[in-house]
Length: 128
Image (cartoon, rainbow, N blue to C red; front, side, top):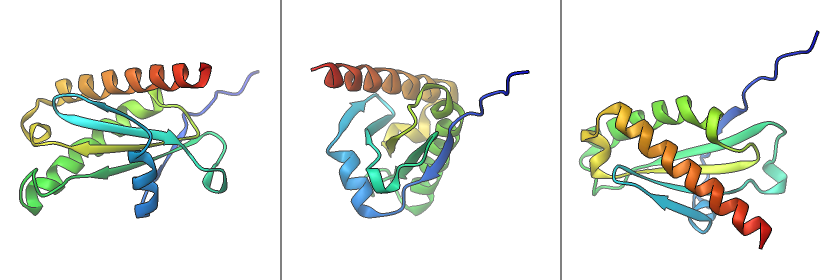
């Protein structure tokens, strides 16, 4: 009997250097969020794991609004990254002002489109 493969685990990015490295990688923007991604560096690489971080600048609003935007992004990432993300990659989701007002299903579609576009760009970069 074959064992079921578990979805990749989601570890959190917490160090500023990791966020800056992701910002230098592939970036895809939609109306309600920006996705930045890059391969996980060798020392932090775990098999079947991906790392994710969330950020919201003061342009999004006050502290309450920024925290709400990050909570929405965390929920969207938990739903979609195991399905569309690649293990061995870091992802940073950047909130925008539209993150707060966008209906959650539309936010999920924005994240899905950004993930698909970023993975296509990563595959094209790997081929070149």
